[in-house]
Length: 222
Image (cartoon, rainbow, N blue to C red; front, side, top):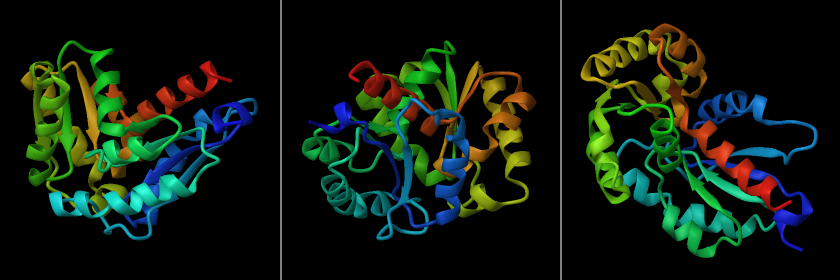
């Protein structure tokens, strides 16, 4: 009997080693936990960098992610909670259950809420990396712009001015023509609700989007 049939958890993996990011993700997913549904386990990849902010950071977590996926035979589904979707193809190649990346899931969710979307990146170097992935998805013509906060991952999770900066950049994206906004870093998870209230347009937290898709896959096969 596989994990989709025996009630295994949805395993959400934060590929950086910052526990504050993992806690923020878990808090943002609290409403997705319900008595008759699967557990949602949020894990921190101890081998990961403190924040995934470069291509090298994204590449260096691939093999540790694969190893973790291989060891969690109890999982009903996996979510890779980094907006670069590091190692998603490698993890899918070894997993016996669905593997969701938050960039892919977040973009798909946003396209269901708006005609043209804007993305808030953590920093400028992330933008080109995300663009390559969106090109692979064939979705670039629906993205009006991606603008960076120019903060670290840790600052987005703990910083006192993070929401203020998110409102500023989100407003710029709306001026660009976006009618839905994606938070392009897992560290921003705790800010989704107040940011949506401030901007007045749908704001997609991509780990929530990925877990919603994972729940759908698990419940449809239970």
